[in-house]
Image (tube, rainbow, N blue to C red):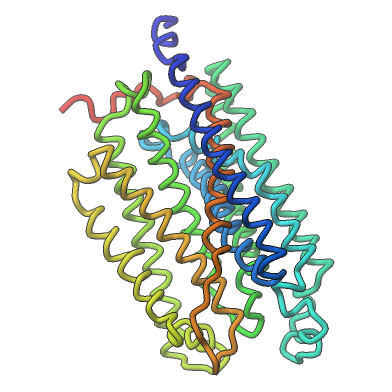
Length: 403
């Protein structure tokens, strides 16, 4: 037994590589976040806050997605999840930092959310919704999200350490038992969170599928980041010999499922809105189809669904570490465009729509992305890279080895 455990130990070469990745991304994150901060003085508060929301939401979605997928993995089992369990934990642990980046959205809410301004409060439609749309309750909900995300992330990591040390089935079943209500609360709180910070940018408009649509987008970013993580890890021992083509193929299939679900939810929302044709519902699409925004919509339709869908149908592309990693990097990049498309058009008048983009819409996602990846690689370094106490570890490692 000791021999097997020694062979799973993280070699110094890999530890150094993870530190190097962490430092590189920390530098990139710092440079772009400083640039974004400077944009506050140059471009003004509202342009800054809009870009801040784009950058922050993109990477907060990835953090939350890691926690959601981790809990789903505990519930469903499966070899695909054992290989990315540590990276998922490292991604979820970034929530300890990301949750506090909500504070500028709460403190400077008047620059983003019209319903927090005197003009908004004079609007009868907004007044009718003030039981939910009010600042004290917004702070209160943030506190609830904070407690949920941090408690569940903390417990899942703590028990996962215990599982490694004790190899006890009791701890493994504790992880499973926690994940069952965890997944339910995750979807519930994330839906409210999507409504609070994204849907209320357009306080007259509503959609019942919106929260789920955004959650799946975050899951897509999270899974893409995990694939990039394991392919980078597979350049070194022990992953070099442990990661099989079958593992990558499974992750690729999951990525395909997320891509299809993202498209399905977007299309469902469009179809229902189109067939209803109600003034308060179509305003969202009017702003996104006119004044140059239609081009962005087309780019998303082709680039976020058609292209990745066709690529991910191919088995050889999913099994090849280089191509699946390239697809994952591409999906993260195109998903930033999706978040930008969800945020920016809300700030335009529906009868005078024109495409606008600030340089901050590039620096903010890069800044948050650098910070997120620095935290991710830093978190990866403080644990063995495989869940050594997981009951189905051996089964997962043999996955795809015998034909």
